[in-house]
Image (cartoon, rainbow, N blue to C red; front, side, top):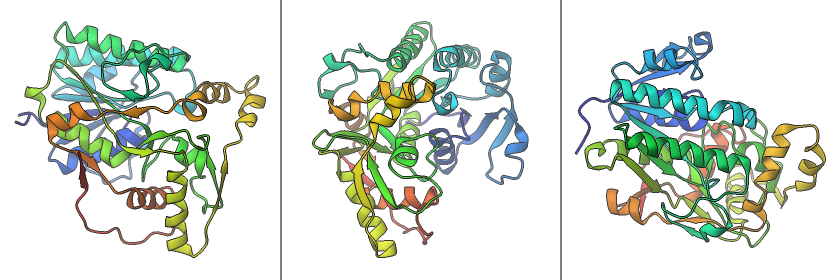
Length: 337
């Protein structure tokens, strides 16, 4: 079953996940509008998106942009880990108010940051959410507000996935921590301790999952949550090994992989807020292996969109300017049970 009105507003469309969801919506036949603070930044684009100047922090701007939309994709985040406590919750309140006014379903990209040590290693959608980090606590409150709004008729869809990587990465550990966007791959920095598993999510797969679920709007509960299995790096080194294979195949050389220098963030913590925010998450890399249970998603869709790892890594490296461009293979995305 599909939704009748296929018009979506994307907040955060200039970022990694927001931009990818916008593209996937267009491919599925949706009309896409997007809010941008400075329209001159996107004036030269010929992407078919209706860009509307406005600020996600301004409730009137969000409401104006949401007119006629049946879905609002809330993919807007403070840049560079900055001012989370000040900006995240007011922005979701504005989105909830706009969705209530126009009758749209909110779509939220979720993370594993909601979960503390008591959640266990394999995460179902209803696992306890008792994070020990300030960012995690904000994520919990953000979803709590969506759940509360659902009881008042404002529908929402939360798709939780691992750490993002993709052709248009935005702020991500892959493009800013493991390898440097815009530069050839020299050294690969592995955030995980060897032997500690980690879940990664390829952005086009996440976006495709969201679109497929949106098109089943009538069958979803008012507050719908789904987990994606994504790419499970069982020993914390499989993603780095994929980068090595891809770079070797393209250039003939094999970059060196080494551990991420967490001590540098410790030294920077007193003076840089972003270093504090990143360091807060270190136990998710060094001591806690969190794996997503996608049984609910597979039961709903019959599969999970899943691009093979080396193909996804190659596209991610090319997209961020770390690998020479080559024609992309014309092949369907694999399905994952």
